[in-house]
Every structure is written in structure tokens, then in C-alpha cells.
Length: 429
Image 1 (cartoon, rainbow, N blue to C red):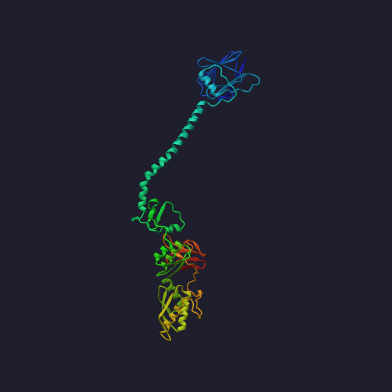
Image 2: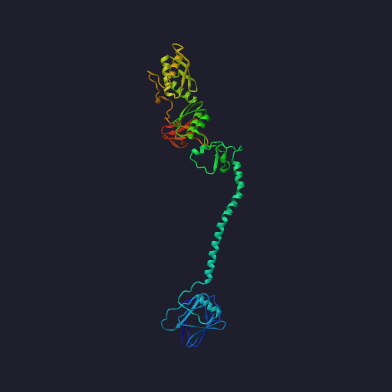
């Protein structure tokens, strides 16, 4: 009886050899084998096949004998697999055994292997090693979580000297914190755990927070700038006079920052002198001039053609120069008499208002003024910690922002430069 040997897997897959009955053939990678295979995992002599009339026996090295059943696949080495069947006729479907069972059978040299078409279960050793790896990973994570507080405390302990050195470096030498922290508060900036001294740097929050005084109130502002504070039914009015425009603008900004919406009656000698000089230049064509302006009293000097001309100039000052309390005309020379000037000045001062009864006010038209700058609201100016305009509601406008249809180009202590469609203006609030 002849038998057909097929190599169904491995480097020589597809090869078919007819084995005649009564003969014995050897398989392996050695040159002395009858059937030379290219599988390098095989031994020089992998096995011998003995064909008899009744069966085919496989003789393995070491004297182990195994019977080959038709259509059942047998593994040789790691990749090569063989099967036997009839030389002629159709073959049934091959039955593949478990690869692990086949290898174990080859190693142990046992008898016939029990094969089945079902896939074998994964080895228990693989499951146990995978479980060990998972348990090891979980244990590492738990240990890391437990050690996190300890590591954090160690980090804080190591960095604490660095933190103390930085606080000493940034803090003022005297250790005194000037009460200007309200500037940061009013600006809407969130400062958490840190007290800022705008003049000296930053200090640590918890240790030095007790040294910081609360933001100044409106009465503190009045005392600081020498203003009178009249409060009635919750409404407060600050009044006073300053020497320069910059002082008035700084006081206005501080008052609006301390209490948004506070009523102000503030003036300064510099602005009053400038406004009165402009009015007299337009009304009298330079015949009258401002000699001095102090504490809301304007002193005039120059020449007036008559009492009517002088009175017109005084009424123009009353109308266009705010906060004027009195006008001193003792230095004005009249054409009729030198004594009329003082009398007229006193009569206008006694009216206590912007107009004189029975006399039409000679208000200067705005289109005749030298400056074409638009009318702007009353504001305050802060130059520290950054230049800004403080509005009545406490809000702030910085350089480069839009305000009243104009762009704030530069903010000075007493002058603000604005840009608009008509050009650049110097605004003196």
C-alpha cells in the first residue's frame, strides 16, 4: 500500500512525497536524511517513517515510537507540520492538534497524543504572571499616593529658606507697608495671599498682612489733602483749593477711588489764572491782565477805558471762570477815576453768583477760544502705580484707551494729550 506524505506547514509547505509500502524514510535537516527539510529548528534527524500494510509508524530519536493516523497533522520542530493520507482519492479535512500538546508530546516522548479540533486554553502560568504584573502596578500606585504628602512636605521644607530670602529681598528695608494697597483693590485686580506695597515691592501675605492698614476713607483723603468734608444724609461734599492743577487732579483721583460718586468743589490757582487770562485776552484785547490768583481770589492789573468796560470784564470772568470768590481791581487804572475800579470790583464780588442782577452776562463764545479741545468731564489723574484717569464712578482709563470718542495718547500730572478726528489736543482737566 502506498501512502502520500504532505508537508502542510513550514518552509517546505506544499511538498508531497509518495511512500511505498515496506520502506522506511528519514526526515530532518541533515544531509544524510532521505527527505531534506529547510526548517532550521529541526534536528539533523527529526524522525523516521516506517510504512507497513496496516499503518505508518513514526520513530523518534531515543527509540520512541508513535503511530500516524490519516488526515491528522503532526508537528515537527517549531514550524514544520506533516500529514499522511491515501495516494489517490480525495482527502478529508485535516485535523490540527494543539501546538502545545504536540510539543509536550515530542519532549516527553509519550504515547499517542489526544487531539481535538478545539483551541486550547491559555496556560495557567501566563495568567498568573499577568495577575502578578497587575498586582505589582496597583501596589506601586497605592504606595505613590501614600508617599505624596510626605514628598510635598519635604519639598516645602527644602524651599522655605529660598522663600524667606526672596521676601526679604523684595520687601522694603524698614518693614513698614505704606497704605496704598487700595490702589490695587480699586483697579479690580485679584491679589490672593500677597500684600503689595506699590513703593517698595511685595511682601508675604500671612506674616505681614497685619501691618497693612485698611484702604483710606473719604475723611482720610480730606485730612491728607487739607480739604473740608461736609456730609449730609449720606451725601459727602469735598471742597478746597490747591496751588497747582496737578495737586487738584491727584486729590480728585484719590477722592473718586475712595468713594465713587462723591461731590467735589475743588479748584486750583493755576487753572483759575489760566482761564481768567484767556477771558481777559478775548474781552479786553489784552488791556487787562491777571496779576495773581490765590485761594479763589483773582487780582487784576492794567487799564480800563471806563466802569462799563471793567464791569463787562468782571462779568465775563464770573461766567467763564468757575469757583471765583472775589476779584481784586485795586491795580486797575480807569480813564475817569482811579477810585471807580475798586468800587466796581467790590460790587461784583458781593453778588456771590455768576451774574449781576439787571446786567446781561457777557459770556465768551467757545468758538473764539484758542483751544479747540472738546469739553470733557471732571476727572482725576493718577501717575502711580501707572498713569490713568479716574472717573467719578471710580473706574479708570489708561493710556491707549478710547474715551469720549478720543484716544488717550499720554497722561501727565496736569495735562492729557488726546487724539481725535480733528487732530491732537492738549487737555487740561
